[in-house]
Image 1: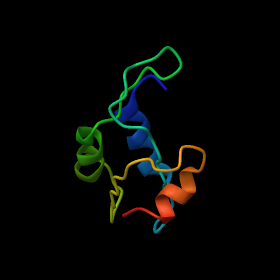
Image 2: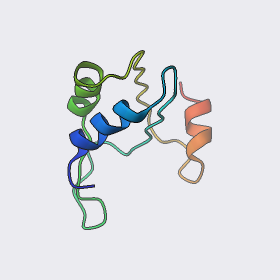
Image 3: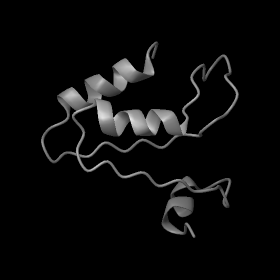
Image 4: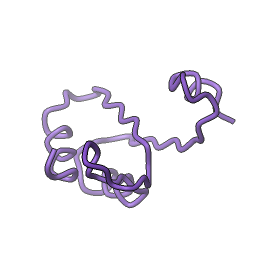
Length: 77
């Protein structure tokens, strides 16, 4: 994707009413050739104020289990 904000705006446009969009990303990492964009808390704030997405919920958590992302989500402290 070339433009994170434009992509998120398009997602909110095509998402059906009451639909879900789950975004799981590593935040504030260094840009890399295969991951050129850095997602920060600013982007999360931007989503809730500049898109048509409703009931935006943000959960930030650390990684305890490096090999099991979903276990991190379920067992967050």
